Image (cartoon, rainbow, N blue to C red; front, side, top):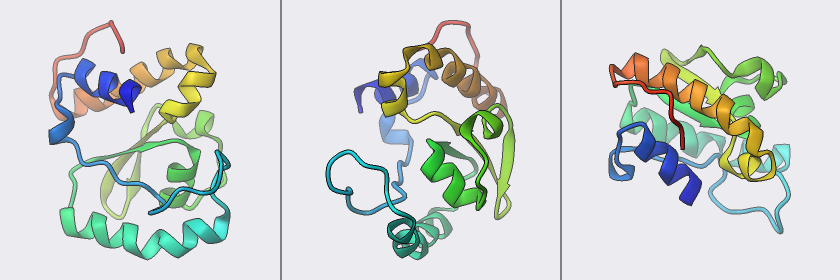
Length: 130
């Protein structure tokens, strides 16, 4: 959570102004990735939340979220760096903060993705990252 807070702050945004959804509404045991049936069982509720709030943009953090929203088996490396369409909403995919803790070199990629989102939002971009 702290790393995500730093990314949001580096973008010039406040955590209170960013709505964060989880693909799952409960955490799988241990640190394992969710099973496909777990993702499917929460899909309707996630769609309901998105429909209710009608975000202008979505940023999918991690492959589980990206694959669920885009219904694709593509890797994060193939999905990141550009906008996709989720039911008429521009969706940008990037690495999950937990991935960054295991692979610090990917922070550069996430910051590049955030710069894309910032430009789309009309926010001032800069070279420094979180």
